[in-house]
Amino acid sequence: DEYHVDLARYILNNVKRVPGKPPKQDVLTALEFSTEAEKELEYYRNLNPIFKGKVEIRDDIPGVLVSSDTLLIGDQVKINKKRCGAVLQHEVGTHLLTYFNGQSQPFRQLQTGLIGYDELQEGLAVLAEYLHDGLTATRLRTLAARTIVCRMMIDGASFIDAFRELTTRYRFPPQTAFKIITRIFRGGGLTKDSVYLKGLVWLLEYFRRGGEADILFVGKYPIQFLPFIKELLWREVIKPPLVLPKYLSREHSDNYLDTLKAGITVENLCAQTR
Image (cartoon, rainbow, N blue to C red; front, side, top):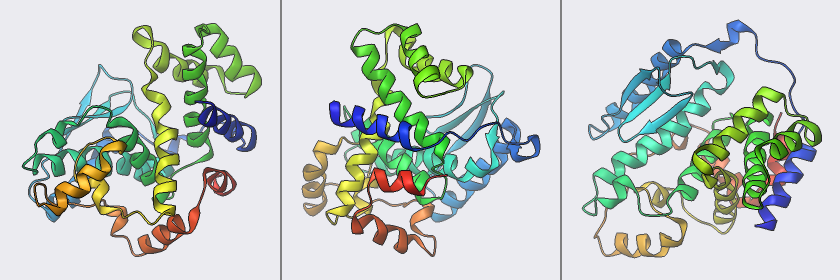
């Protein structure tokens, strides 16, 4: 909608692009990143044996993603060391964690996800990056660009139109712009990439209104089902989450949550992000 498109344009106009790539020594290969991922999985396995996540390096995917109980890593992937923890909290601390929490529920659909669950999932995953000090300027600009391109595609713009918009108006490097646009135009058009920013905005407002974190991790469900999840917990039809993200256990997590409840906005994030 117009609000999120305007917000995306605000981000792109106010968050400056960080030029250049990190030095080679500051980048993790797929194998090195998988080692860090195994450590992260072991942390959660020690918390609760229900957590049986796996890591797999594959030659048929371009990045990092979660499928059911497995973290898949493309064999050509390169992860900035500064972003390593944030990526792990996004994929393991959100997507895998809610998978296994949902698996433990009597209502098993919370494991694979109720229809429309992506907005809350991806919003939580991006918030996890922020709470782990990993929401960089480049990442925030990427999320905003995805929103812009989704809207352009819906309005009938071509791949080339979107490419020119990102490279000319917003100064994205051509290769970066190509990757962002390909994600959205693939298969005839996939608008899922618009939910990352939308979910983050909803969560910031949710915490500003005094919302609690734990209920968000009982499984995979859409935002509009939150009142039903609360009632199912009250009726003891479903259970509280067995495992919570690592970043909620860190010493300063209360300070982060206090900041969220004080009313941080995306505009505030823009000012903080470097």
